Length: 152
Image 1 (cartoon, rainbow, N blue to C red):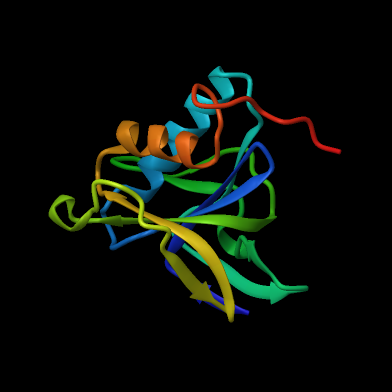
Image 2 (image 1 turned 90 degrees about the horizontal axis):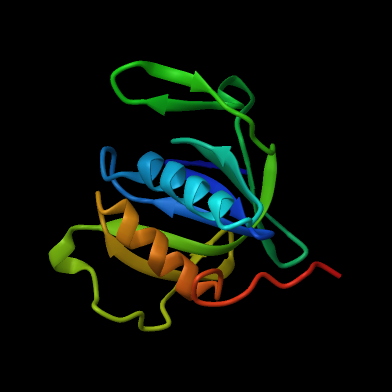
């Protein structure tokens, strides 16, 4: 299990790992995504802010929240604030927040490898949470771009 500087959320049963430099907007993107998808009637939950533990299990990438920060997220200007969370998730998508000039206009089917597991990755402009939420919705075929499929 390795510690990684990242934030993680779950949306419609899909784990999303938000990566990028400190201050690039990972936490804000997580908050925007949670609010957007919940308002659309889609299950969305926070996993961990700023630090995650990554491990591989049965060919899947697992993310866990470190116990000392479980249920805490940075509210800029206030500090750590409590919120509901799930302690772990299987990661299905990585979102890498990059400088706007380095973000491709279209997704190129990029993958990243963590713990020996390849997962799809989209690179999006940092500090543009609303635009990034729409890109995540389109990538995962969630509202307004698709419907949530019932879990079997």
